[in-house]
Amino acid sequence: MKMVLKKEFMKWNSLLFAFSMLLICRAQVLDHVEPANWWVGMEHHQVQVLLHGTDIAKYKVEVSGLNILEEIRTENPNYIFITLETKNKVAGNYPIKLSDKKKVVTTQSFELKQRRSQSKYRNSFSSADVLYLLMPDRFSNGDPSNDSSAELKEQANPNLPGGRHGGDLKGVEDRLEYIKDLGATTIWMTPFLEDNEPVFSYHGYAQSDLYKVDQRYGTNEGFKGLVQKAHQLGLKVIKDEVPNHWSSKHWMIQDLPTSTWIHQFDQFTRSSHRTLTQFDPYASNNDRNAAVDGWFDTSMPDMNQNNSLLLTYLIQNTIWWIEYADLDGLRVDTYSYNDKHAIANWTKAIMEEYPNLNIVGEIWLRDQANMSYWQKDSPIGALQGYNSYMPSVMDFTLQEALLQTFKETNQGWNEGMVRIYENFTQDYLYANPQNLLIFFENHDTQRFNESYPDIKDYKIALSLIATTRGIPQIYYGSEIGMRGSKAVGDADIRRDFFNGAMQSEREPSQEEYFQFTKNLFNWRLHNAVIHNGKLLQYVPQNNVYVYFRYLTPDENKTDEPQVVMVILNNSDKEEKLNWSSFAEGLHGFEKGNDVLNNQSFDFEQESMMIPSKTSYIIQLHH
Image (tube, rainbow, N blue to C red; front, side, top):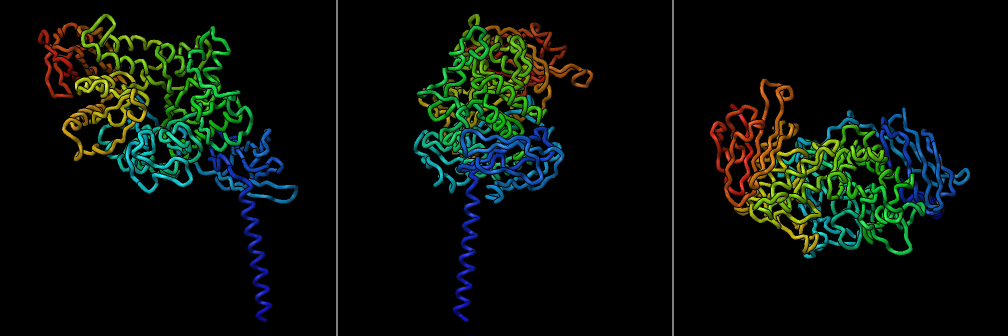
């Protein structure tokens, strides 16, 4: 009897082992299913699902409960692309089955989730906001246990300037109160998805998995939790998108779905960076292709958005993250390096899904007409029948003017504060200058406080971007005087931050930077005249720049206008201002109070001496 029982046990044990192995084999048939889920009620209701696994093209595909509108097998037998119709479907699981003749080889659940109410019409960032730009690896280390990962190539090395230093999403979440206290309202993080390059992976712009948060930063769920906590504090979060290039270590680059998925060359070919060829009416195809198709770096292959499968993949990936994490907007890296028609289709698809979403594109050009070309409904783009659909672009001409202005304390004809004035005279070229992102530094530029270590210059520059038209953006560490030289290398302008950032750790000089920034941004929070008011500027005299922001009585819904006067003296000596010169801007107001120093002004007096290197932001009143 015992022998019989033993044989039966061995028999069932063998069957259980065989069944387990069958399950394992089935699980290994598909290595990737992207996206793994979608939502009901989406404008983008026809979903292209990528299936990837060794030699899967030989199998038949069925999806229980969903119609397959299109099925594409490429020259690589490891891929099948299926387009599913989700319109009028309910939330639930819809199994994807692969079968060999009548035998089911594997089953993969595809989930349709319930969409958040009002998800389509989410609020986004605007000129009422202040963006706080940070690099997760350099900002704050909230969880030292994830500094390295055995599954990823580069391990933590805080002593290596260009290495992984351990900052993560938990660190950002722990410092949300700090960002809110500063008066910033929107967080822009540089990319936090997996970057599995062996060196310099900390910056994140070579992404190796577009659906996965880098393990050294945390998890997808952790990022979603960060956004939820930010929203609870009244903060917004935007994601840095990189459609132009991926990492050379991306699993799809290692096993290309099609030969045209990326731009390929006989030998490594870097982009010429001559993106003006995108709209140069006389450009040769050779020059245009050299700019658009060349790789950004040896580790960053150039994606071919003219491949319709890839373009759909990129569109869906962006929509997936917005919907999954409840994002408040996007910043798009190297926007003008993409094929201009393909990236316009990408942007248009995002905006059709989220009509109120704001997206800002990186257009690093040195001329307002050239930058304007890339903004939605641009009058410049219209000359060539082109519309990028991109709501906002980064105002690099203003940033470059600011880097020059403070070297020129004695104003020449087009020097000093005239540079700032002239930048705004070109606003007629933009479809929406109020929606430009304005800044004096970011993660790719020289640190402002390195070039101008005198806090007086910082105060003038910050006063400008906080009060003129557009959406101000500050870079982490600016608010405590952080320095760094681009000439030394990118790592020097991306130093570790949170040592010394808390009030108890700040030195007196850092505290002065912080308190000025905090007071200015918190005042800005509640002033609609700065968010939406018109701009009236005067030609700078003796390096003193004066402008007004104002709302008319109709716009202000009161009996009189709301007016703020800004005075920026970049001169190395005090200068005299005659109030009568600014009668138009004063709108009949006789008095004002400076919000920075609580100083009173009487405009019925004839004039006033303005101290050197001083900024005033004056709220006018009777």
